[in-house]
Image 1 (cartoon, rainbow, N blue to C red):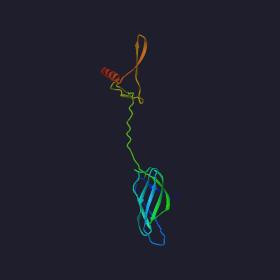
Image 2: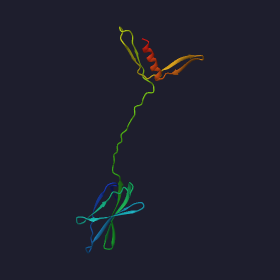
Image 3: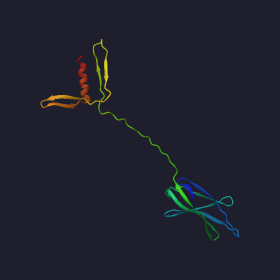
Length: 168
């Protein structure tokens, strides 16, 4: 049995060469039978140049699933039925490409980046020291039970910087 690749979501055109021999001339009608699991699909063939017949299969994605189906060319001459050709149709969907934009949000560091600026007298240069790693500042506070550490918030740091700048 021959195998033929066909597209499920596109129109397929098949052409067959048909030779009918006999003692008297007769009209022949042809059709292509596609055998599905639950049903058979029949497509009428149109005569072409002399001994050729043409069958057009419409897009069948809404009727068939991807896979292999038995197909046969059926010919009826007068009152006689012939199946001169059997083949397997391998139905596949055509290749589709899709693309989607990927949006990535920048992750924010939870710990602040601290820059220390010391200003000394006008004779000396400004000293700027940057800490590259984000740090989590903590403060030691003494109470009656001993030393306790607590985290310093951004607003606490701003208050400390304001207090230091007012000391001048």
